[in-house]
Amino acid sequence: MSLLSAHTLGPLHLPNRLVYAPMTRSRHAGTVPNRLAPTYYAQRASAGLIVTEATQVAPRGQGYPLTPGIHSDAQVEAWRAVTDLVHATGGRIFLQLWHVGRVSHPAYHDGAPPLAPSAIAAEGEVMLPDFSMEDFPTPKAMTTDEIADAVRQFGHGARRAHEAGFDGVEIHGANGYLVEQFLSSSSNQRSDAYGGSAENRVRFLTEVTKAVLETWDPARVGVRFSFGQGRLGTTDDNPAETFGLAARKMQEVGLGYVHAVRADGADMLRVVREHYDGTLIANGGYDREEGEQALADGRADLICYGRPYLANPDLPLRFAAQAAGLDAPLNEPNSDTFYGGGAEGYTDYPLWPATGVALAHEEPADA
Image (cartoon, rainbow, N blue to C red):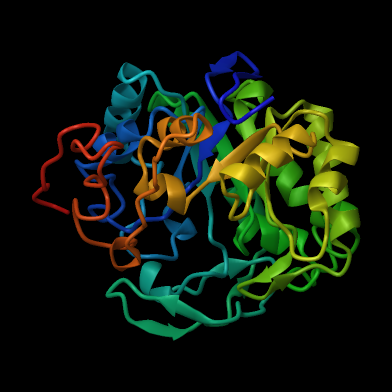
C-alpha cells in the first residue's frame, strides 16, 4: 500500500490515496461559487478524492465572508459547473456540509444571534462580512425545535448536493463548528436529551447522519472529526469515550469514511479504528514520507493534504516523480492569497515542470 496505489471507497475507484482537503478560500460571489471554482477544483482532479471547502447548509450556518452555500438554486447551479468539469477531467468530488453554530455573528443573520447547543461564546475573534474582526458574541442556546431545524437543514443540503452532481458528501463534525459543539463537553452543557452523557452529546450527529442518509447511500458519506482539541474553545473532557462512541455510531450505519484530524498527544486514529472498520482518512500536516508511513503501518487508508495540494495542483505527479528519484520540488503556498482575491494564488500555481497551469483560467468579474 502506498500513496500512489488505488483504493476502493464504496462504489468509487480511487486511483491514488491522496485526498484534497476542504480548504476555505473566501472567494465567492456572496455565497454562490464563483466562475473560477470549476477550474480550481478541476486542476486538482488527479487526487484520489476531492473534498470541497466547507459549504453552508443554510443561511444560519454561515460565519465567514464569501463562503459558499448549498441551499439555493443559484448555488446548486454553480456547484453543478464544478462537478461537471471535475468529472470531465476524471476526478471524484464530495461536498462538505457545514453549519458553524456559535462561530458567527449577528451581522450574518440580520441581527439575530448565532445558534449553539449552549449560550457559551467561542474563544477568539469572528471575521465580519467586511473582513474586520470582533470578539465572538454569546450565542443563543438552541431550542429542541431549532435543533430539529438544523438537522433538516443538513438533510436539505445533502439533497441539494445530490442535485448538483457530487459523488458524495462529508459531514463537517470538526474544527469547533456546530456538530463538534454538540459533541464536546465544554461547549455543550445542556441538561436535556442532547447534553450531559456522551450518548446524549452524540445524538445530534446521529440525527444529522440519518437525515443525510435519506438521500445518500452510506458508502458515499463521510464525517470529519478533530476530537475536541480546543479549536475556537471547543474541548472535550474524555475524547476517547466521546469520539470512540461517535465512530461506533458511524460503523453501525456503514458510513463510507471517517476523516480524522491529527490530535495532539493522543492517538485518535487508533481510537477510531477500534470502533470503525471503514475507510480512515488521516489529516494534519503530513508530508509524502509521513503519509507513506501512515499507510504502511495501517494507521490510515487515505492521506489528506491541504496546503501542499493548494499550491501543487499536480501533487500526485510530483510525489511520483520524487519517489522515482527525480527533482520535483513543491511550490510554496502563498499565504497572502489564501483568502479573498481572484486567480492569484487560486488557479495560477504552476505544474511540474513549470510549463503553466493545468487548465486555462481567467479573472471573473465577480471575484
